Each structure stands twice: as C-alpha cells, then as structure tokens.
Length: 160
Image (cartoon, rainbow, N blue to C red; front, side, top):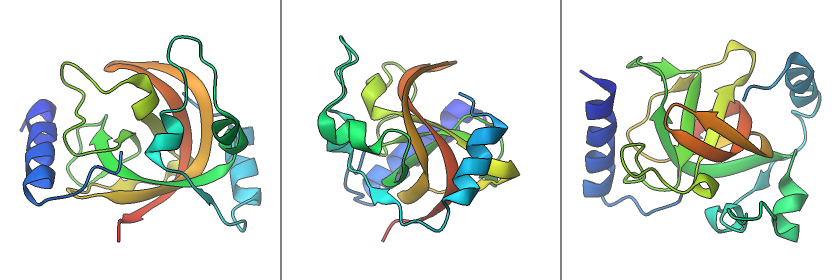
C-alpha cells in the first residue's frame, strides 16, 4: 500500500475513533548527552507552547526558549517518513490525526521532525502517542516541507 494511502487511513481511523487533537540530523555528541541525562524527568510540552514560535520572525516565547535543547515529552500522532509497516526511525510528530503531510501540510511550528536515537525504532501507531526526547528549535527542510523543530527521540508510548 502506498505511503500516502496509509497516512490518509491513519488520519481517518484516528479521527473516526474520536481522538482529540493533541497536536536534522543530530550528531553522536547529541546522542551521548541524551544518554547522560536519561535519568532526569522530561518536561511535558503542549502544542500551544510550540505554536508560540513566530513563523515570520523565528522569535520564540520565553516558555519555548526554556525547553529548547531539553528533554521533553510531547503528545501527538506519528506521520512516518519511511515505508515500513511495523516501526520507524524517522517521522514527523503532529498534533492531530488529520494533520497530514499532503497538501497543505501543517504549519512548521506544528511539526516536529524526529529521528530516534541509537538505532531505536518507534512502533507504528494508529492512535496518539507520547514522544520523549531532546527537542531543538531549528528549521528542518524535508521532503514534505519545513518543520520548526527537531527531536532526537528516546521512546514512544501509547497516549493515556
């Protein structure tokens, strides 16, 4: 099944089940520092905080600046950037199941480009997940448009 069709089905299934909208590459040094801080509790970040990044000027709110470079936990939906049915190591995290990468994609401040750390894989999910990892404010140009954030992902787990 083509990737675009699976993503569309993900959106339809998630929406029809009534899920609420909860809406780069990093080098080895980043992976090592992520491991070193793995014992610290991640900061929970809401999509409203990410929306505080001004898309025209690039200015971030004080609250958003506080989480730049920190370990965070964000709820959202996985949009895979790989054509694998079971797990992915690179994906976009978006706030709602209808925030798909087809035309038009969500605004850049509503997409987090994720690469899982250390060869880890995130299980494909048809529902919302919690994503944990180190968040950075930076423009990431990808095949589906620009994202204002990147994350070195540690783990995903079902949203509860």
